[in-house]
Length: 168
Image (cartoon, rainbow, N blue to C red; front, side):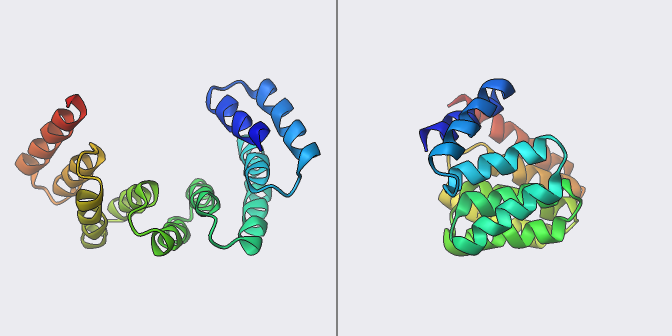
């Protein structure tokens, strides 16, 4: 609903009171709407009720297993809960459905780098490079991989490349 979209935007702007009103309006119109349920989950997560937030997202996924936003939200919640391997699996579901999905590729690559799985991260970065050539996140992540490998000159080159892409 429009109310849910407005609620997500207002939460991002840290206008929680207004977002809550939009959630209430969206819930009264269509409580099972996916965007409304994701907004409810976001409110739960904001109050650190992560288990309830995850439960809402998983219920939504049981009804619509191809909901990319729900899978991304699930991955984010799992990361907050300290479950990076489960988050990787959620990102993988998005990538299975939409192989060039920017947020899922970036999210999974970052988590893989953090876990020291550079080879796996490199595969996602290569896909990013091909699918989102002009996006600055590609050279940035390539730089991260070089940095963690101790290849500091290459890391610097990639960081400079990310700045250049960002200026274009």
